Amino acid sequence: MEASFDEIAAYCESLAQLIAPLHPLIVYLRQDDVERAVRTVCAERGEAWVKYQVEWKLKGPYAVRRNLVGLEGLISLYQDYRQTTDTLFERLNLEKMVIENSGRDWVRYNCQVLERLGLSNASVAK
Image (cartoon, rainbow, N blue to C red; front, side):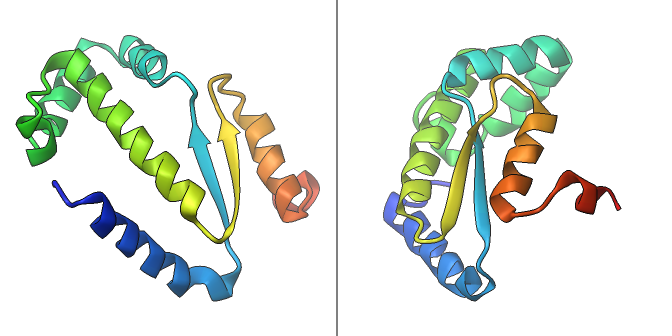
């Protein structure tokens, strides 16, 4: 919605301060290659889904002002979004971890989070 990075960062910082007493673990699921990730999901979900995504996500002020259109515009939007989220995540002063999830091995990623939290699969399964 065209908020400045500083406005977004200030909002995130206020949220981080608010939740800090809870000692959260912030898990950032990301893929190194944003373009490949978007194209993979689009191929899996089909043309109707891509059209829906393009039509609503590229109508926002950010995309309109940058003339983002079609699948290429959607990819560009996500690449820009990723730069922002990477920077915001880096600035967080909370416990955090990054999981590169291109492999889509959700069982392994879940185990990584549980291990980081000091939990076992057995205790979660109950």
